[in-house]
Amino acid sequence: MKTEDAIWGALEEVLDPEVGVNIVDLGLVYEVAVEDNGQANIEMTLTIPQCPLADEIVKNVEEAAAAVQGVKGVKVSLVWEPKWSPARMNDKAREEIRARRSLV
Image 1 (cartoon, one colour):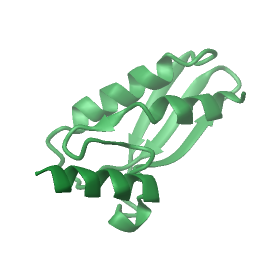
Image 2 (spheres, rainbow, N blue to C red):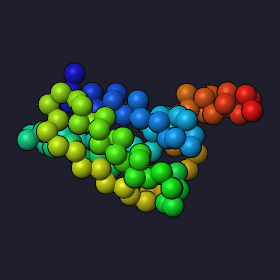
Image 3 (cartoon, rainbow, N blue to C red):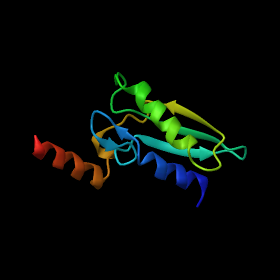
Image 4 (spheres, one colour):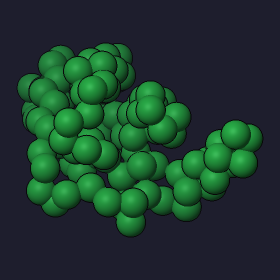
């Protein structure tokens, strides 16, 4: 398995604490690239720029990526273009959110 693919898999374990759905299914991760020296570069966004849990989410992303075999360092870049919208979510995320709403 390529290191990039392993990182994508690890990021599926990182939840957006406010939504309760993983950041990959939410469409928050835009790019994962690993340099020859093992440096992982992750470009991602948040649902809103003023997210009060931004630091926690970035820390969780760094920890998840760093745990992947072959990763020697992690740099997370938060970007705001393209802007996140619900259209970036996959069907799995939509179903999870609907299920959570029906429990309330």
